[in-house]
Image (cartoon, rainbow, N blue to C red; front, side):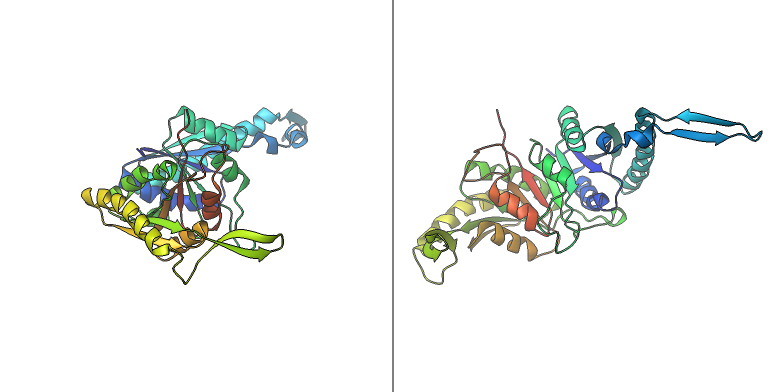
Length: 321
């Protein structure tokens, strides 16, 4: 399934934080990495681009040339191609096939277009959460791609960095959040493929939300909490256990180490907590769950996990059409 991985880079060290993880994943999946650099034409200053460059000859004569926006974009594309080739050479040295692409236009639009036209199986990008104050904020380009592509996208927290020259053999553990819906189960196939290639443990997780009524700003409110008492949770856990065990059995039949993990509380927070327990963990989840497709955006639980998890999150979008 994952044979072509598109990695957009913008020349910053931040964007390159995805490379180690992407290279390690590509290695175990025997996939090709396509590096992409997009020159944002909106950032080209027209006035600066059209100013005259003065040149003085040895004889003292002065000549001038005019640089057009096309000249500036052309130079930027040439430099981007050179920079990408250096990165591609390092990835190739790590044993992974790598190629490069450059383009100009709106970065998010070009990324989505390249993914579609080249039949990319996975897009790998980093968030821009580089400080505690910025936590929960995605880079604008990453956010736009996430909310518009039908291609699976791997989103990496900047702190989870592996150097290209020190790539791992893929994730040690794969967490698959489920909620009983067909949409959530679309993440199972991709998760098993990664786990099998990397010889990872698979943990099928479901979070039980327990209803309660309380008093809030608006009066009596409905919420979800974690109870110490029963409140019918035993029978609910038994039903959930049977549901998850079906996936565990499928994974074990494929020769994988698998387990079920039932948690209670806020789904997004519990998934984030589960991912934080062990390093080198990846979360593979559908962008939508029991709530279904109300509109073409990332589901609320997936969105919160992406913005809060300090682990790579592979989002599997629904198949439309």
